[in-house]
Amino acid sequence: MKLVRYILVITLLCLLPASGTAAGKRAVSVDEPTWQRFLYYFYEAQRLFRNADYQTAFQLIDFCHHLCPDDPAVNQYMGDFFMGFKRPALALHYYEISFRQDPGSETILNRLEQAAFYSLNTRKALHYQNLIDKRDGYDIYSALQRYHIYASAGDMKNAYKQAERYLEYDPGNLRFLLLRLQALESMRTPAKTLKEAYEQILAMDPENVTVMNNYAYFLATHKGDLKIAEDLSRYAVQSEPNNPVFIDTYAWILYLRGERPLAQMYIRQAMQGFNGQVIPDDVMQHYQIIMKEK
Image (tube, rainbow, N blue to C red; front, side, top):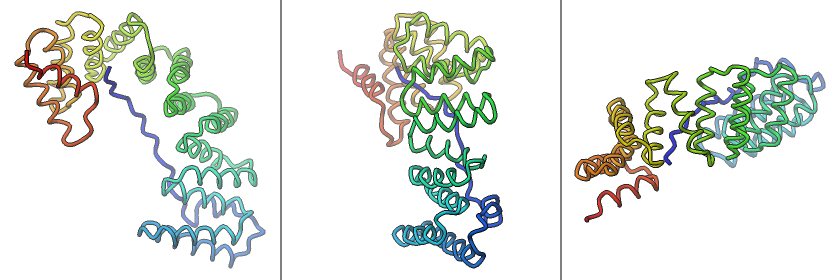
């Protein structure tokens, strides 16, 4: 089954300016001239990195750390540097040093969870999320983070459990019903359960064309009503006429209904719609079957 995932965009934290929180919390053991040298080399390393002079940038950032290695704010800056340049595993290392030096820092705790998440360290991401929950309590943000920690690691069974957990608090929450459906689509879910999940969401959000497309494909591949599948798929294609995934679904349903010439027209359109991108295996398989001469 082709899946159109619901993406929760989690924005990377911005690098702090010199006058920001980290600078305000620097250890008193670091004298002002040393701190100013650190800031100068730190921002120069950023500039070099942006200009693709990576070797010099990393040499400079390493020198920055040698200037004041035991200061929590310095290590936070180091973590911010590596997060900003998409090196979360290195960022996690420096954030952990900073947190050991300043365990009461709420800012560092949040950054630790983010760095662990982006470095796909599930165990640590959950550990720091537990600490955040202990501080702030369990809420929708916590539930979303937990779901995506598991989902990013491919553990959809536990991701599903996180969606179910939050739905106990808010049974009608559409976002979590969609996340629950995403998890169900990824697992070996009984057809009856999956059918009920599709219909529940479409009853609440009848214009959701992504769910409509997926449900149409589900019906087509689980001996469901092909007429209903065709109607759902046609509506999805009319709503997003340039979506090759939706067009492929429609082509496949037309083929199953015996309308080969029309199916061939739509499957060609679907193939062209990927515009040089990697064509999914199921779409390629549909193309080969639909275009095969009798």
